[in-house]
Image 1: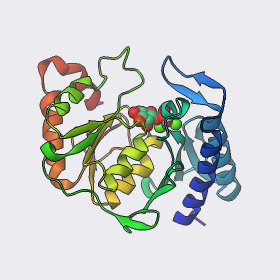
Image 2 (image 1 turned 120 degrees about the vertical axis):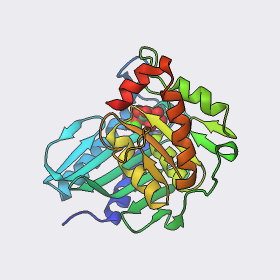
Image 3 (image 1 turned 180 degrees about the vertical axis):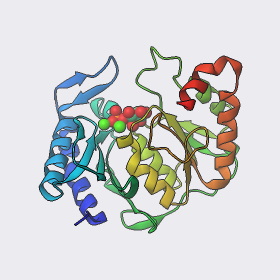
Length: 273
Ligand code: IPD
Ligand code: CA
Ligand code: CA
């Protein structure tokens, strides 16, 4: 039996309890790189999710941030970020989530993102709309960047890579009503779904950051593409531009204008894969 949306919700609430219990508690923090950290709570949440999924869906494939690929039948695949927003979490900033997506034959069918601090559960099943705590949600309708609140994020390799998002950030900061860096890509996408953000762009994320949130944003009526306008956001090189369909056009036009500048060849190469 494939999982139901209710199965994903139950898993997200379980992981959310673990995140809440670990928040603001002393714990070991390991550095994956100078600025990319992982806490005991990331591992605890992931172990819980893997154990639950393996117990009930033994043959499924699981892609999880801290343990990588857990081999199974790739036609039935889970994408797990046990704690999205670890930097916030490790600083006591209450903005983080757990993200769980489920795909069949490469297509995401179910997605749940849970913010345990606000007790906000975002969910979607393909073709059935998007919900926040079981109330339907919709992307905002604003059609102009000038009146929009937009979100983005910066990659962990930004000290060493010239492809660090600062050129797009600079341009958008001069064109939008407001710009935010929340620190949880999964919540960024859900906030687009809920109309809290009008648009979101980012790159160099991973499938576990995106799988659930992309479906939730799409089911809420947002258009989600790569930053160069292609629909395949869940394959490398990961990049996302999400907004309601009218605003999306302007979002992509601004991105394209920045990318095309001769000094931004490294960005052109990155987006071309
Ligand atoms: C990160 C967050 C952040 C985004 C990074 C992600 P993590 O996930 O979603 O907002 O900018 O690209 O890697 O490391 O907190 O799970
Ligand atoms: Ca993440
Ligand atoms: Ca994570």
